[in-house]
Each structure stands twice: as C-alpha cells, then as structure tokens.
Image 1 (cartoon, rainbow, N blue to C red):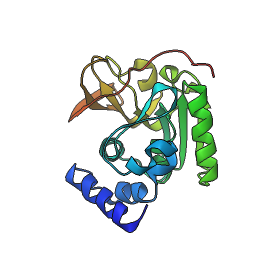
Image 2 (tube, rainbow, N blue to C red):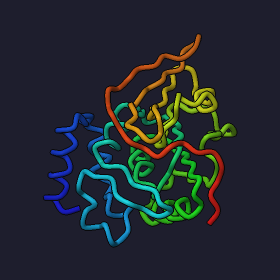
Image 3 (cartoon, one colour):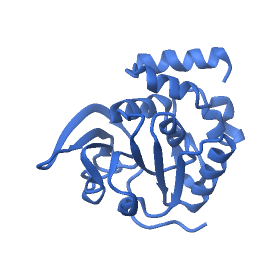
Image 4 (cartoon, helix red, strand yellow):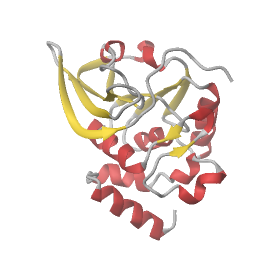
Length: 212
C-alpha cells in the first residue's frame, strides 16, 4: 500500500467504527492486494467485497476490522477461524494472536491462502482443508473463534470448543438475507449472547469439503 492508500483505508475504518489501535495497526500491516487476483488489485483498498476463487468473496475491510475488533484477541490467545478464503482475515489475526488455526472447505482456497501466508512469512498460521462446521476439536479449547460464514444460530459444535471465558463472533440469520453479527461468550454455566448491531451478508456455513 502507498501512504495515501493506507491513510484512506484507516480513515474509512475509523469512520465505520473500527477504532482499536491494535486492530488498525494489524490492518495497516496487511496489504489486501496480496489476497486478491490481479484483476482486482486496483480495487483492493476500496471498502467493498471482491470476488475470489471458488465462487467466494473477500469481505470488505470495514467488516473485517469490525469483526476483529469485536473478537478482542489478546497476544497469548489461540484462535480458530472458520472460512479462510484467500487468508486476508487470518493474516490480520496473526498479528494479534499467539496461534491461529483456520479451516477452509474449498481445497483450492486453502492452497492459495497457505502459499500467500508462507510468502509473507506469517509463521503462526495453520490453514487446514476441512469441514469448518465441525471446528477443530483436536486443537480445542480456543480462546477466540471467528466464523466468516452465516449460520441460523451460533453453531453448538463450535461453541463447545471455546474455553470458559472465551468468545466467538459469528454472523447469524437466514442465509439469503442480511444477517447480524453476534458475539457469544462461554461462561462457567452456559453462554452469553450479544447482538453487535452490525448488519452483514456472508455465504452460508455449509458442511462438507469441496474437492479441487
């Protein structure tokens, strides 16, 4: 990013409610152009979703920033991301967390994300090609979970992989309409839900793994 592009991005993020200095620094360090195809590199700094491989999209920076801020990742946290895409969100989280595991159901996207993370020297990310709806029980419990696909309700399988005191940010709602971001915190006796009052639109959380 040029200094002008960086400044425009930061101004946009702040105007959309992303004010956490650690999140802003992580996003400043993560060039979105690295995660889109050559066709869309000129638009990488616009606050819009863009197409990526396998018929998926990369979320707009303000939504990525808002979700990251809501997750409140701490430096010693182990984080699970469900839905890697090309790895943009994971790259940002890697600057905030101790360890990040990201599960992607499209094998082609998992390969792209891994290659990009390796090229950028992001060594605390592990991208796994698999069914994200099942989470990653062999690495549980997690301090934070971020789901980048919409579910009718916060998935119980993923909630069970949170440590007590941990939290999950997930888009909730009917898949072909606008959804709402929700943060769920695991307590000693159950789960606390909070609506973040942020309308979003994500692809639905789908079971299974796509070949390719």
